[in-house]
Length: 135
Image 1 (tube, rainbow, N blue to C red):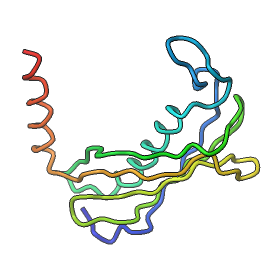
Image 2 (image 1 turned 180 degrees about the vertical axis):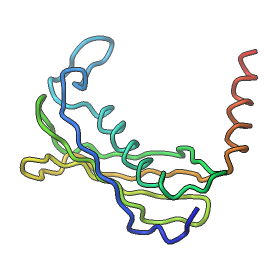
Image 3 (image 1 turned 90 degrees about the vertical axis):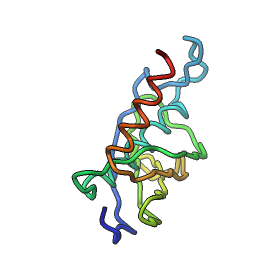
Image 4 (image 1 turned 60 degrees about the horizontal axis):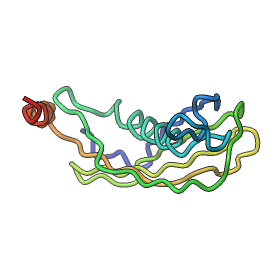
């Protein structure tokens, strides 16, 4: 993977729909965008920002995500999630992300995601190891 990645960014947008509301045990808690949805799109943006820079034999796995949910977004609002690479040491890559309302740029969430860049064969071995536990 290239090492001059600091500052590379990726943004994605989504419209909050009813399936994205805060729902636990099949019960809607609040009719607004859930933290789970914010985490999904933060991870998506953090993944998309690094994909163009993989070498053929590389991939990445998630190592952790921390998200602070700051404000609410109603069903029907458009959210923009932006992730930016802030550090990379050749293996551990850290993205910072922020979700904002498209309409007025209200900050909805912010945080960071750690990803580990590994050879695909190592990731395949880790996956196989996990499946051996259920045999």
